[in-house]
Amino acid sequence: MIVAITGIILILFVIGHLLGNLQIFIGPDWINAYSRHLHDLGPLLWLIRLFLLATVIVHIYVTIQLAIENRRARPERYIDRQYVKATFASRHMVMSGLIVLAFIIYHLAHFTVRVTDRRFGLLKPDPLERYDVYSMMVYGFQNYYVSSFYVLGLFLLALHLSHGSSSFFQSLGLNDRKLTPRLAVGGRIFAWLLFVGYTSIPVAILLGLIKPAQQL
Image 1 (spheres, rainbow, N blue to C red):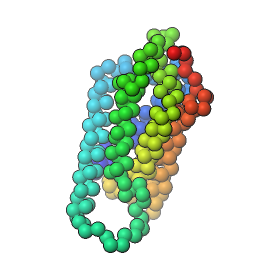
Image 2: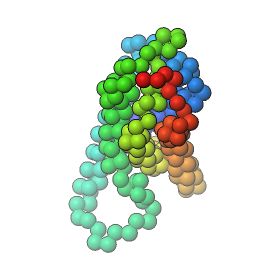
Image 3: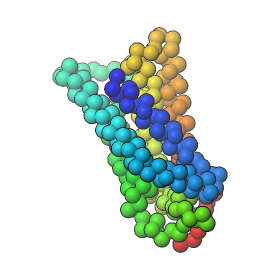
């Protein structure tokens, strides 16, 4: 239940974060204003960040504990293992979760702390004296290696969510024989829609569809 509840919280954040980032397609004013609104929250923003970080840590810790308990319950491996219902995503939840954690850490260093690209410090404020998040994202994703890493991280996140977004219903006891298969399909569709939404940003930038608002 702890894994399920923390998973729901993180899924809601992923949805909200995507909706904020997609504003880059509307224009600089929209996403720069969105960023300013977040920073205007002041100490509350840091409380939210700390809460999300704690949620991630608890989610991963309890997931690993469950994996260890499952291993101890059957210390001997199957001689002939045949998977009937277990998907690749469900069998590798711990591994994909840890890699996603590494991706999150890099993402924070890249766009939140801004220590991975010195060009970000050269950006001038926009006409309304807001930090030019629009140009920062464009310059950040113009790097093929960075964009490739993001796509890989998002692929693993989608793989993780394709199982997790439906399995938490089972953990909370909110399923039955008819509902479970539908939730599984819905979870996969939801996860890959998120993947398309997030990856559309670096792909559009690499294709030159989105250009920086200021030149460096």
